[in-house]
Length: 447
Image (cartoon, rainbow, N blue to C red; front, side):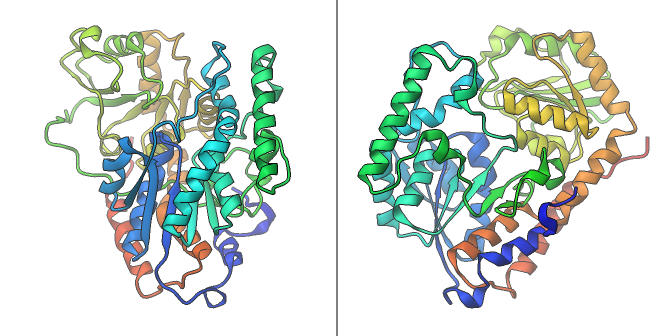
């Protein structure tokens, strides 16, 4: 897809200062600040591993429940109180999931006088050369502003952030809640010597640089994103081998079904999948999450593998179609490993992702709550048989496989941290990782 301002991604990186203009150090201390949710944390783990592999020190701050995940990535772990990174709305209204997401910046802003000083103390203790923070994480963004440490933002989504003030539900108690948050936030900024801003004004400011974990060709309205946004593509480490306890039937059509980690409490949909793919010519792998009790679903058909969690990237290499909630990470993984999609989105962002994927000919959309077993099976069969989908996926896969997202992100972060490039080490390491990943990607068979 055409790039804004006629600049290549590689060309944009040079403006973060050439190595000779920065410090001569070859090791940096990097601090990650993020929202404690799998969809936000997972894309950064391969980046952390890459930085560590280059010799940098990485410290990752999250609640204690994330310790094992972070330490398994090889990073140092800095525990934060669960409530510190989990501000929730307190307006007393029963709102939709999208509305609650749109209000999260206001919830964070109300907590800013308590959270920001905690993060400041963390930064002072760790003394990082660079902070890597989630664009949606208001306290982290504020800590960067208050400490003045060089920083790189990142985003794990591709839509524009919804403005809660413009929504029809933003009236009465909800409007009062947002006004109180604006006042609290403005007072805190003033007390710290910063110009007063509303929450919307603060959140709308784009940090330079902002790393985008999206395939550039997939980005909606790409031309409106200027050079501050660095499209590195999905941050995917090599998928592990498929575990031996997950059988694969070679003659069957294979379908992976997953609604992600946050909105997967859908027992009726899972039973519908039993009916849709229970025939012998299918094999289904169903991930139901931790909320649904398998007993409630009843006995699955014999051709089903049902687990709370399944190795998604491993399975995407062997399935013929992916029934997904259209979370951006899942969609990027599906494209990288070449699986057509049936998308049943729930949130505003997922609907935008599904619409874009269907527009590009990568699969089909469906309504999760207005779908019959026959319709789902017919859509899945259509996705497998449609000869136009493989070349459409291949076009985006080509751009994904030309580079390694996590390595590009690490390049940007190291530039911001001001360390020298290591030309003798990084290209060789990147090539070996890239080669191993390419071997796991499917080659489309002739149909």
